[in-house]
Length: 282
Image (cartoon, rainbow, N blue to C red; front, top):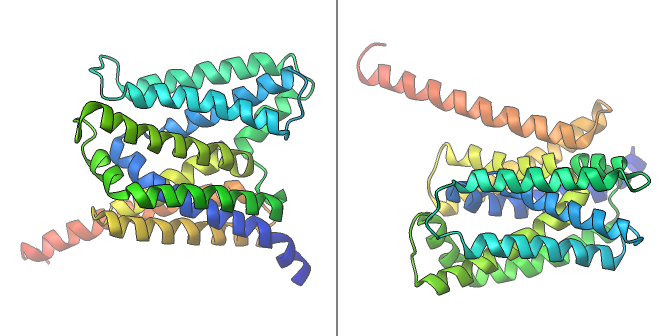
């Protein structure tokens, strides 16, 4: 039992780190209405890795990581700088097209690389169970740096997220802040996806925030409750995966997804019951 707990210590710690940072970003992403941007960013990073592999570089090498970051930052920078331009095509459509193109190219490249299909699968499912303390430390350092940056600009980022259709500051000042936000966001996603996989990262980004938003619109309360829900769901999901000998990432995804729906139905039922009591129907 002790040996199993020691083995799961690093994965549980990694899931707590992912839940904490992704729940924070999820509040901004949900407010901005760009729900699927993390999937697009993750797929762009995977495409960069595939290009590195085609060049004969090792998957975990620094050069491959730099290629992934380069492609991700270029695309996300273009997105941030053009965000407030008058657009005929909605941003969600653009994000979806970017994801599909990046996935299509990655699949084409995978056909030319030995074991390329396995890499595509790993991008989707992640590698949470086999994460090491070295991976955890690297994530912690990256997330701590991003956290310091966001502490310096947190009020500004909230203002921009609350005014997603307008320019809260001068055009170039707003775009400069957006550039900082999206680059730090992309750094977190690129770091998180190899560990948790696209589905788990997306769920931790959106599900805890969606659950918290059902009950409060306060940024502070949403931050707190999304952190609590994300971290509790991750730890409980890891425990269930260990107890029932099932995959950890799908367990966390299913648990958080079901939690959101149960809370939504519970809130709806409570509102109807309160309305009936108020109208004297009970």
